[in-house]
Length: 337
Ligand code: AHG
Ligand code: MN
Ligand code: MN
Image (cartoon, rainbow, N blue to C red; front, top):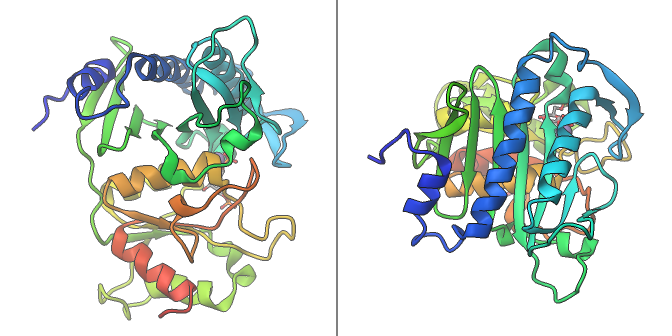
């Protein structure tokens, strides 16, 4: 059993030989992400006390109202990461275009995509929220990164993970050698290894979906969701319904307990025919994590990690979690079952 209680950096050094990713530059990238997350965690934990709740009055590229903490987290991440000297560019859910690294800072060849605050609708009701990140290496020989460098398959990610701001603040991430969980010990300000080598159960006990979208789903999606609600399934009994409304929180519970999270395509909003969740900053990073933990993730037809993005803020239906549950849902949605 891995010696829990070690820091992220110690863990990276111990596993240096197994993971070509654990270079000094990657360690610097992760350390800067961690620093930014500690600041966001501090603000989240006192959000109720200072005027950081509520709306900024702006509308972001997603057409959603930008909450102050969304904006704050976005600015903190951009500010810290642009000076880290390891990125050639980054992209945020909150920014329409890619974010260049100012010339005054050294650059590297990593590409970072992030959702600065996932679950924004839950910020001012004190429910778990998180930060999701995806890391690629720039492969083009362009001197300057362009949006083309971001339009990749999720299978090309070199690392991905999320911070979860809840009763405790956690970091869960993978570099392609399994999934490890670290818990922030506020007394020392370090993320300490608390959940080494996380594996998701092959079948779960709960399903997560926003059932208010039922009338907007096609018949196959309705049939797939029904599968988890009735005893006529491989378990012989209904799955429990759990839906927090923060993807990272629903994902995290299912990662440990087993289960399936679904955000299917719906015809509720003609501008979002492929559902609400974003491929590059939500579906792809969490799909890398779930596959590394022995789970699966599809868009109802194909593996999420096989989808090559065609635009920065591309949306994608998402079925993610326990391998057998996702395979079953995908078979039904794709018409094979
Ligand atoms: P974000 O706060 O980054 O916009 O993400 C919100 C997402 C995701 O966290 C969650 O699973 C989903 O929106 C909930 O959507 P509904 O309220 O439509 O169920
Ligand atoms: Mn999100
Ligand atoms: Mn967000």
